[in-house]
Structure formats: structure tokens, C-alpha cells
Image (cartoon, rainbow, N blue to C red; front, side, top):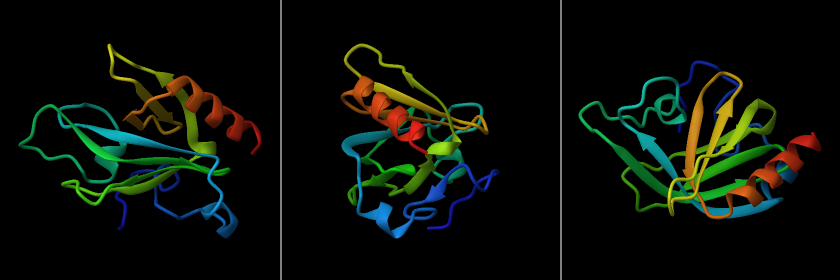
Length: 139
């Protein structure tokens, strides 16, 4: 899958910019949903990947898994989704991590240096943020 993006370093196809040893070395893996907000304004990972549908409104969840490696945070979608994005976010491109949970929905927002944002529904947000921060500190 080729990724459409403004900043070539912000979002990369799954597996790119990883050393071969990183592919097999996951620090943490969690089931997650990538949230695609079809009405959002501003840069988003979904827009960069070409996942937005102009005629749609609201938010769509894409089920998959988040995998944290020593160099990147990867999302790999399940095969049963309408769209199946596979992408990675290099840890050195992450500007901020926020727990934006609402009610029972546990959500993590990842903001990149370019201003692009990704939101994931995932359990254990504080633990995931701590693990990502620890991996970023080790870079």
C-alpha cells in the first residue's frame, strides 16, 4: 500500500523504516480501533492514508492491533474491515500523547510533529503512554 502524505517522515507503510531486528521485537501489543472522523478538519492520519469518504459523516472505527517496537508505533488492521490500513508512526515523530477518554471509551490521541493526529480506542491508555514514553527515551 502506498501512503499519501504531505510530510514523508510522518506516517509510513507498515514495516518501513524498521530494522529487521525490530520487526520481530514488539515491546507491547494491544487490540485497538483506529478512529476515522469523516467530518474532521485539520490533518489526520486517516486523511493522509486516503481513508476519508466525502459522503460519509460521523466517526468510523477500524479494528486492528497496535504494536510498539523500539522505533515505531504500528497499526495493523484486521482483514474484516471496509478499509485495511497498515502504517507505522516513527517514535521520533511523536510530539504528544494524550488520554482523551470519554465515558467508557478509552482513547489515545497521538499528535505528530507535523500536527497530524491519530486517535485510537484502546484499553490501558496510561500503561500504553508510559510504554511509548519509555521507548522514546531509549532512542
